[in-house]
Image 1 (tube, each protein chain N blue to C red):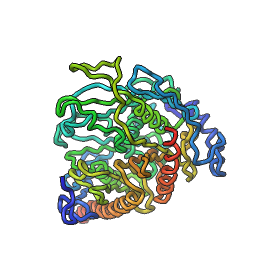
Image 2 (cartoon, chains in turn cyan, brown):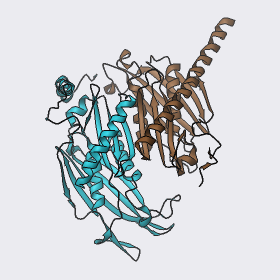
Image 3 (cartoon, chains in turn red, blue):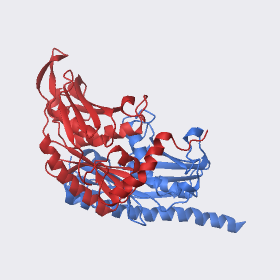
Image 4 (cartoon, rainbow over the protein chains, first blue to last red):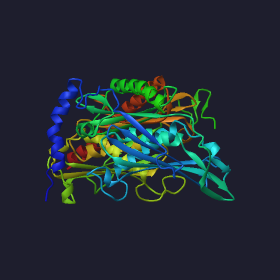
Length: 265
Length: 240
């Protein structure tokens, strides 16, 4: 049978025009400004068994990030540095659109963009995660667990990941064994990267899109900024395209908003 | 590692100089359209199939053609053998590359069909996603798929605090950042952008200038490749 449109898509299709009209007049269905994040709430150390964790609520989007660490061999091109690996699971509990199975395009993209922000901002001092050069280094594993998908997973996951890394404590390492029950010193982190995503709808770029806005957007643009006001990662996703001036304007906004969010960390 | 010496780059190039690029259209017999690109030490080959039947049937779209894009690296294309098959990096590249083309092709002309783009990286030397996009674009045109424009891609980057065009492998490995960009040259619209590494706003603007200028140069080579192929076809018919 040829698929025409699923029931769940029809609802978005019906809402499409009203969302677009609102944005055209500078408003949003939840009353926010075009360049305003939804309310952000943190619940730090939500999973005490993890080395670091944070549950972030961005409006009704909920993302839980846990940080685990173990000891392994370094990569040959960085014998004196620890490693970072970021993964993302869009578990079926979080949305009727998610199903179980191997990670799809969307979850891979979320993990890679969040990873890029963490890595390129140089927030983790990987040299301090070397135990014995060429033999033993710490690997930091950031796992993104989406619990409720109401849009803008990248920013929610990025905020949760940065928070989780900031409160992470390293396990003890004794006689070649990791003792998870005893936490030693804090993970060596300094920088606080902030991710700002914009959805392009009717030629306007709006910050922190909710799910209903993502459903009608042409494309999405994510910018990660750091404390110095510099940019450390960009990702354009979706089929729309951008003028140069639009991108420069979004960068200005991302730098400004990044400063505000960073104060909350 | 010293990447800039006496105002020149490690491979002797100027800051705003591309590597040598060769583009050839129509290199595969079975594909509906194809293209081979040599870009410095990069070698990539793109093939396009379609519009053709979209299978399995439940993936069909009744309003437009379904576009797929597969970026794949050959196991022997890099120093350490790459495990065959898609990894997370190539899944991401495939996604953003497909999205770069979605609004450029007239997909709405071919409802319920599939247009499949396959790009194989035979040898990799930094900038493969840009070379792949550039090749895929020529292959789509070679397949006769109606397009609003040819997409063209090129990267700029940051090396020893200087903005440079089209990073080579050493600059990619030991440099400070990379900014791959794909544009539609007719409108100047940006269809793909990624960035990693720390850039100030000013540095970003300069790098983007470089990347766009690089794209426009590569675009001339794309047009030349397509003209060359079809000029030759004209001669064959003329001789008959």
